[in-house]
Image (tube, rainbow, N blue to C red; front, side):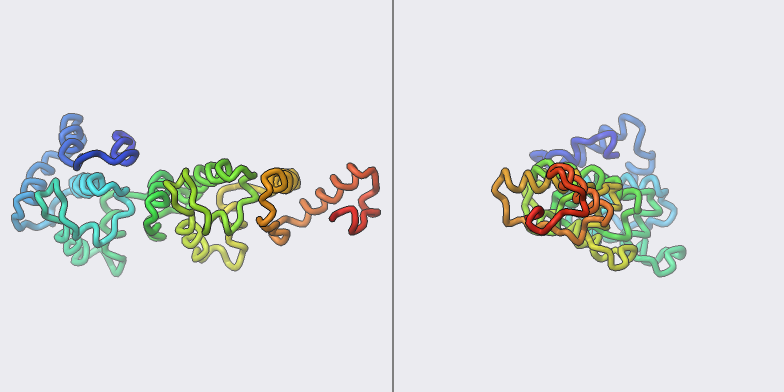
Length: 274
């Protein structure tokens, strides 16, 4: 749905795009025939059973609703299903929640994740980034590890470029305190908190864990660039987190400093490093 119509999520329309999206999808043969019957019943407020309705149709209904409220379908919450939808003449999808709750195959799984999963709606890297930009919660049970890693590989370099520093040198402050234009003026605190609570982190420094998930390694050259950038920008209040730097890279830093001074690394003294 979003791959075919990226404008649905990239900019806010002046009015609901739901009906337009429905028409385009129908013309392209992307909506099952039973969709018209289901959408007609929803718009009229007619009571009906979702039992027997195909998951493809359910996916189309959910995606249409997500498009109207400007949120990725994979990140819809229960309140989103209960809110009035203009394209449904002010009706909502509360009956889908009841359908999911009573489904015999749910077996205790949360209602909305079960519904989305069965409808073939999965979180993508783009969904996660859109969620960060909107400042809304990232649902852990909607996001695969690969999708999150893909989102990190996209968003971290954008953050670092705006902050004018190596991506490997991003710190806690950059995630939790700094509003960024690339995130629509929001911080990345939601992303930080989501990964802070990740059970796979197991005590690792949160930012190191985030960078590791993105496949980003911190090097001695990055540290030099960071120190130089910090000095050039007179941004000296930014703390250097030496405990985040791998021991081998600190060793390389010392060798680089010794070579510049024309000394063996073993002869370096405190005054050479201050």
